[in-house]
Length: 259
Image (cartoon, rainbow, N blue to C red):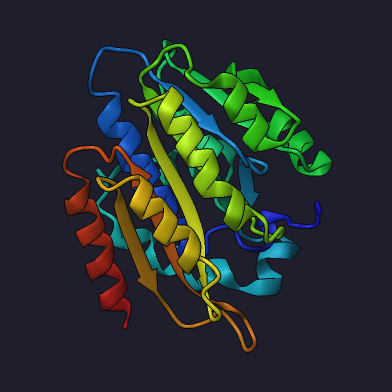
């Protein structure tokens, strides 16, 4: 299935958690001189418009980043990526995770992106094709398997599937186990939705048993609209960087302040 398009959901509450932790982690990693590999399995289009028909139809950005933009300090890496994107592409521009990565990495680092959806892949190439990114139109899980362990070996992988195929919940623990064996120093970040019927529970139980030192961070919020199934957002991070607990605590407080 290739029906999912993130333009309807860009800037929602889940994006805020995912992108804040991603931007913070990359900023932490590039403090060292050693180069970094960044791999993303389900990249989307990389750049979104918060005033697009898709975004306005759902109103999720208005409930998410539009409310929380100013809650991040000006020196926070996520806030910096937001401001840079707006300055480069216009007032309603919002960075997807590939753009956040591209803006946070250095010339010595490597950027690997997979997106299978043809229209999303074309938009991704338009947004980041001139940035030196290695962009492929293929299954993200196969793409990541073929790259790991990457060169440079130090790095981060973001796994952010749309979960429109229910078998993803069964596939991901096996995928993470395989990648972690091949790339034991990689920071592996998984985003997952928290839905009313909690299909993530078995997946997270398996992941936690396989990766006992990993970080699990979840946030809850009201559904975006009547009948919407998503009531929260989660991140599971293998080899979490030092100090990330303070960042998850910041997000916890930010969401509590929203009520």
